[in-house]
Structure formats: structure tokens, C-alpha cells
Amino acid sequence: MSNIRKPHDASPEAPHARLPAPLVLLLSTSAGLAVASIYYSQPMLGVMGAGIGASNQAVGQVPTLTQFGYALGILLLAPLGDRYDRRRIIVLKAAALALALLFGGMAPSIAALLVASLAVGLAATLAQDIVPAAATLAPPAHRGAVVGTVMTGLLLGILLSRVVSGFVAEHLGWRAMFIVASAAVAVAGVALWRGMPRFKPTTQLSYGALLGSLGHLWRRHGSLRRATLAQALLSVGFSAFWSTLALMLHGAPFHLGSTAAGSFGLAGAAGALAAPFAGRIADSRGPGIVTRLGTLLAIAAFASMGLATLAPVHLHLGLLVAATVVFDLGVQATLIAHQSIVYGIDPNARSRMNAILFVGMFFGMATGAALGSLALAHGGWIAVVVLATGSSVGALLVRLWPAAAPAAQPRALEQG
Image (cartoon, rainbow, N blue to C red):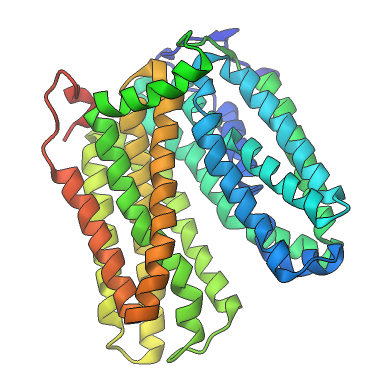
């Protein structure tokens, strides 16, 4: 990794030279491996329950605790990137994640597995330290492209994790998946330790004051509020769709199984592959235009799902797949643009800004899952489509709302 080693210390603002491609690849791969750890368990729940002697209800808490740990870690641990050397935090979290995965693979009981699952979620927030680190290392003129590339790795980690874990569990067993994942994260941790520079802390606030500053940042920066609110609204529709898709496909008129529903996840590749492209547009044309285009794509895609219900079954299914590709592209492109906006607000608070953005996004996803289930139960699939379309329209309205005064909203940050 000596060929990607940066200067001994990284200042909050990187020089204008491009980042070495191997370093960007390392950050992208590591972010993907970290976030994939959250999703490995989902396709393996059946064999995990049988292998460890636990009920379906008990083993069903594994992904729940992992997701809870991740959300909690974003709120409580991610802000530490502003207070301490990010390189040290990233390496320590990589070690903790490798140990948590190894403990999960060796867990003798469901209680131990649940503890490991919570620890995996907490340590997997390593991904949310890598993205602000990439934004700090990248020169301002290329920040969107670099963040987009790292997010490609993160999104592909989400996309491929279920496929990989299902295959490994079927051929080698579920414990082997955790052990293999532990080894992969450990290797990535060593590579990050050797390949990344140290980062100078950007604040000396105590931990309590650091968390307390989240509210101050929220009140001070209108750009942060707009980005968080708009992404949360998009996440409502995103989560409402994915949380009800399998149930919709299982019923009339499709009568398809879980395999068909799972294959829709491949549409996420469109969003992942579009991330660097969205970042480059944000660099050249400004992130504002990307957020508006992204929300418009989501609106058009969700609205077309409603019209597709009028088509014959085979055409309906094809239109549904196409709309899934389009809305996922729109949501992911908007996220990249929002990250570009947020990371440009205050270089000294990038980790805290990132924490606020993703906590808002997770809140939107939780809300979308709950509202989507209610909509499907009381109004059918068309009600889910209306909910997703309406929340996307709300996101567009937030993006079209006039920005705050330049004193609080530097013009260069919004660029439209």
C-alpha cells in the first residue's frame, strides 16, 4: 500500500491534486465491506435459527439489532471523526467490526448472537467515517466525484451482501459467512492503516459538547436542514416501496415468490453505478441541479407505477422493473448531491454533518416502512404508490424552496 500513502497528516482541506486511484479504490472497497456487514444475516435467518436452536421470532431480532446498532452508532459515534484522528477511529472500528463478526460466527447461543449483532451494527458505522474522510482528502473541485465513487462501493456492498451471504451460507454454512467477512474487514483495516494519512482534529469539544453541537449545527445551517429533510422525504417513498414489494408481488395478479422480489434488488446497481456520474455533475454544474433532477426522476418513476397497474400483467411487471431502476437512480443521485452540499458547509464539522444527514435518512426509512405497511393494508398497492409519489413531491418542494440568506447559506454551497 505504499503507493497510495498520502502525506503524514491530512489537513481539513486537501490540495488540488487528484487523489491516487488506488486510495479511492481502497476507501470505496472498505466502505462496501463495512456496510455489507449489516445485511449478511438477512438471507441466512432460516439456517441460522435451525443451526443455533432458536425460534423464528428470536432469530428475527438479529437484523433488527444490527440496524438499531448502526443507527445508534451514526448518532453517537460518527461525530467523533471531528474530535479525533479519523484514521485512528477508522482502524479501531475496523478491528472492532472484525472481532464482532468473528464473535457472531462463533456464537454458542442466540443471546450471544444478538449481542454480536448489536456490536456489528455499531462498528459498521466505519462506513460513515470513511465517506467524510474521502470528502476531506478530495480537492474541492473533485469532491463530488470522489464521494460518488466511494458511495458506489458502499451501495454495491449493500447490493451484493445478500447475494454473497446466501451463496456462502448454502455451501459452507452461516458461520463461515461471518468468519469470511471478519477476515475481509481485518485485511481492509490493515490496508487502511497503511494507506491513509492521519487527520488533524477539527474541534476540541468534549464528547457531551460534541453531541450537543449537533442541534446547534442544525439550527445554524439552512443547507443542512434542507438536505436532511429532502433526503428523509425521499427515503419515505424508497422504504415504503421496498418494505411492501414482496407482499405485493406475492398476491394478485403476479403470485410471485420471494426470489422474484429479491431479484428487484439488482435494480440498485443502477443507483450505485450512477453515483460517480452524479458526483461529477455536482462538481461541474452544482449539487442543486442534481437534487432537483433526482427528485423529478423519483416522482416520475413512482407515478408511472400507478399507471402501470392499468397495463396487462406481463407489461405491468416490466414497467415496474424499469420504474424501480429509475427511482433508485434518482434517490441515490440526490443523496450524492446532498452529501456534496453538506460536506461543503463547514470542513470542521463534516462528521457531525454526515451524522445528521444519515440520521434523518434512517428516520425517513423507518417512517416509510411503517406508513407503507399501513397504506398497503388499507388502500392496496396504489396507496403505496401515492404515498411514495407524494413524499417525493415533498422532497422536490423542499429543494425548490428559496435558500436562506447568504450569511447562513453561502451561495457557493447551494449553486441553485
